[in-house]
Amino acid sequence: MSSKIEYLNFPGFSPETWNPFTGCQPDFECWHRCWARKRAEYWLRGKSGYPADEPFRPTWHADKLLQPTRWQKPRCIDVCFMGDIALASPVQIQCVYAVMAACRRHLFVVCTKRPHTLRLKLLREWGCGHIRNVIHLTSVSMEMEMRRWRSLSEFWCDGWECLGLSVEPLLGRISLPVGDGKPDWVIVGGESGPGCRTMELEHARDVLAQCRELGVPFFMKQLGGHPHKRSKLEDLPEDLRVREFPKLNEELSDEQGTL
Image (cartoon, rainbow, N blue to C red; front, side, top):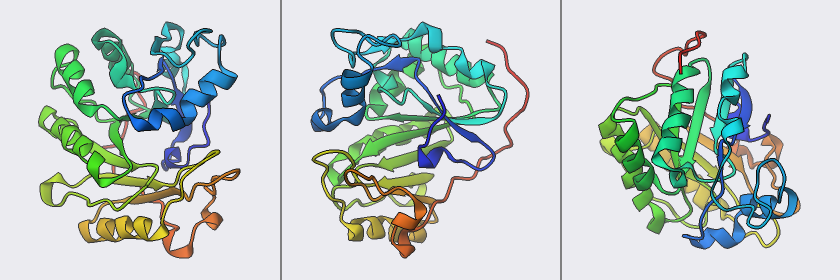
């Protein structure tokens, strides 16, 4: 389905979400605040392939797998936006990556809180072959979660090219890695929804300053809040109206690959 997610407005692409796999597990504190879980429980229970008893349990949606092959216009696609693809089986992950490899006109964004798990499953079924139209992100909120970035950075060893950080929600100061270990893209956003925690603007400004020093593209997604998440450019302080995208290493192809 089409999307209003700000960081999917990559120049030359239409924003889209694709959910061949949905759901998650209560491994982290954010489970209790997860907007996707609440959406599944309140709006999707028993609908569109979501289980009626536990709508946010890990679920494979085979009928959604080939959707990108039918989209002719180039799209920037958030993959498994309603879950964490790392929880899918190795064979299911292989199927998702095979579709991404075949749809070279699209750009795919894969975000996971479990990069180590995803990498092991990819190595098992996909090997070290990479797909240049895929951006991998891992989500962190505070410094103690930066170990996820260390796990994601190992994807470089397997030939993957564009790796980044989704710092959402930003709940404390974050120190970005430097040198060869720096990310290719950093997205920052505040928490939204009932009971949301406030993002300190100085923490966002600090991440921006680090990106400027390292030469890393910075994308300010939203300030967060409730009932409005304040994601429009005019909602942001003037110095945080920064929405940059990573540079692709090559032009994507209009040709359709084979599955």
